[in-house]
Amino acid sequence: MSFFDHLPEQPARPRQPQPVQPGWYGPPSDELPGAARVAGFFHKSRRMVVALKLVEVYSTGCQLELVWSVRRGNESDQEWREIVEESYNHPGSSLDTRTGLELGVAFAEGRKAVAAIHGPSSFQEAHEVTGPVLTTLGGGGGSNNDEYVQFTGRYWLWPLPAEQDATLVVRWQALGIPESSLVLPSEQLAEARGRLLNYWSE
Image 1 (cartoon, rainbow, N blue to C red):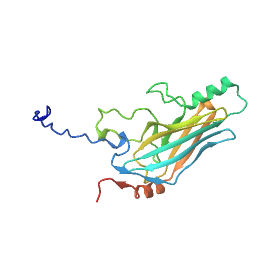
Image 2 (cartoon, helix red, strand yellow):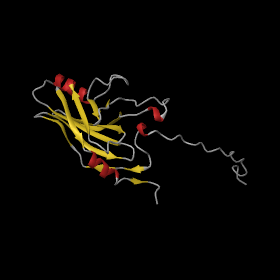
Image 3 (cartoon, rainbow, N blue to C red):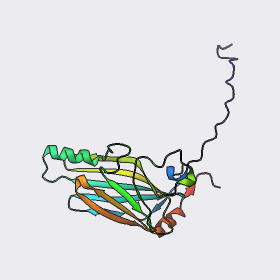
Image 4 (cartoon, rainbow, N blue to C red):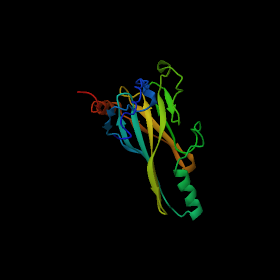
């Protein structure tokens, strides 16, 4: 007889129902998004680029992936290190939206939002949040060396502007990138939403 035979069974643990996440919280966890063909440049100069690389469309909103890159000019080693550090785009605090890369969205009827680290308070009822909500999801990686630096960042936009075009606006004052905009065409977003796949649908 083994020492481990006849050990008492663990008592059954009641299953804990999971709360339904509101749409503004982030991408649904049970969907493969449809990719929208809306990539383009916010800003493009001889040395600096900020671009919309990818838009993944879900049933409730879309995930935006931005890429930015800087080529080295005649900066000293110290000046280049400062540019590289700035390009990491670390926020000063969770409430600080006015440093580094600023990203905003304007809906056709006039509603606006600026990207923040946190979305609406979890204590708010879902019907109290009308949007748009633009939330920073974090970086997607990057690289740098003595000649260039390149990083990406991900953002969640809710609700999906599938009825009328929306406008994305960026600015990065520390890198000398002026306010620049790019249109999110509602038609392409609606088409991409039609291509998404749900994990559990038959």
